[in-house]
Amino acid sequence: MKMLLCLDCDGTLLTTASVIPPVRVAQRPIPLARLEALAAAGAQLVIVSPSSACDGLPYPRITHPDRAQALLEAAARYPSDLCIYLSDNVGDDGVSRQAGFSYIHPDNFR
Image (cartoon, rainbow, N blue to C red; front, side, top):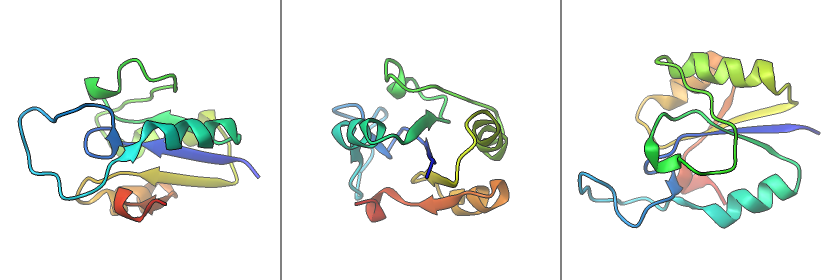
């Protein structure tokens, strides 16, 4: 089974020691080691965030002003049996549904 995991960056992935501007973070960002393990197991990871916090990560990046369009482009470029969008943004559950993806908030990603 092929799995596509599209990723938001800020607040979703643990890529920086601090967030600028400073914000209170109540959630638990995903450690990069978890992404490495998923990629090693065969998952296709794609970053759909324009944030510079994800610069330097070894995963393809697809950005579009409309996040649903970025997800649709990722799905077209990397056909998969299971498409998941991992994000902490308010409203991204609806964006995920619009693009035909399953949505997971970082707090629910184990």
